[in-house]
Image (cartoon, rainbow, N blue to C red; front, top):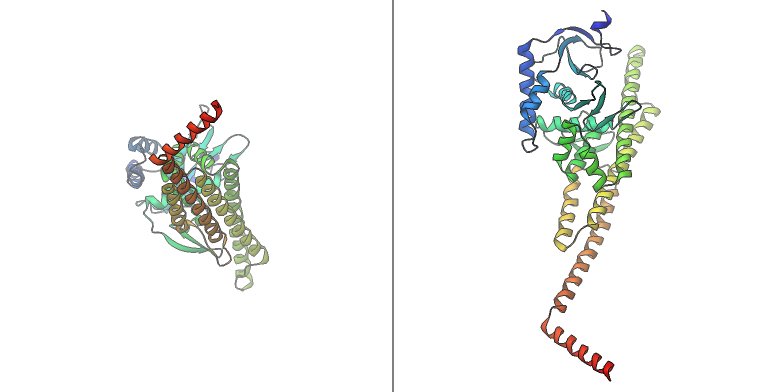
Length: 356
């Protein structure tokens, strides 16, 4: 295989381009799913369709361990395994086409953004955040049911078992900040979602979320590689695979990072939100949102931070309500007719004493 038929160091070997009718069919499926899943997001069907239709698509020999469909940023192409059934777009194929839609390049053809992921010559930021955002979109596009999945001894409400931990964090942010801005930034490649997180949760908190999700993804990949190596070793030795101490330590670290991230999100968000309320109705709305948020979070037998926070938040909210009631009572009193008469009489006597 010559270099012209091989994608750099990916190991993907190009066989032939897809036929036009297959390209049109795939583009129709992807575009329709996006528009039906997010009808209120002001997305342009024609823009999406045209971008995907102009995408180079090829059959290829895909190395073991890679997906049956792969987006390649250098030529903006999608490469399908030559023996894959691509007549019906599944979540893995769909995931790669979202990558294609979200790409932004400068005039020289250099990649500058992939959705919420920032790319420059020195670094790539928010990679895991972007992967989670794409998977969030994918689960909604395929209308996957929400269920509780147990990952590393964490019970997580999830629509997917593909990147469930980091996708759950994105789901929490979408619930708190609104889904629309997440979809916009992920598909159209802008900073609105990032700005929204900074405005409502905090800049240092955003940096922590970005860093922690990257770390979770990195450790997850390390665990997968260790488990793979152990399976190969066990097959050779004829023994069952057993998690070693290093894997257990890595799992504990993921759990620690996940709960740290989750705690930072809800504490910062609701602490900021309660400061902005202006009346009793708004306090009750915030309390209700906090309780609804409970359905988004991951839990574990040894995790109690959210319950403890709710107790403290409830007490603080009741204090705010009491303050608003006292202010309201004072305003009513000041507007009372008799109170105004008494106030005028006192004023007359004060003025008379001053004159005397």
